[in-house]
Image (tube, rainbow, N blue to C red; front, side):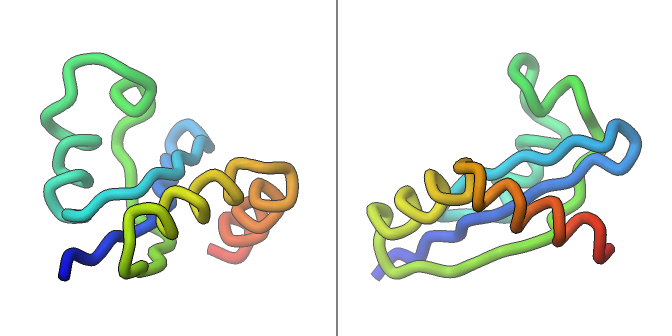
Length: 84
């Protein structure tokens, strides 16, 4: 059974965060920091993983990612960053 990860990245240099989900966190993290040639995360490198949650299904991970992008979810992320 495939496992999915919801993750939050933080760029201390730019004080930016990014929330996403994947089935392969290591490869996705490498993509955000090294491989991508366009997109949001390219502009704010380097990134560090500051939070992860594991899910058994893609739909659960997508639902959680969507929640973390709401106002309540963004407050949760702000607190995470503040506590670093």
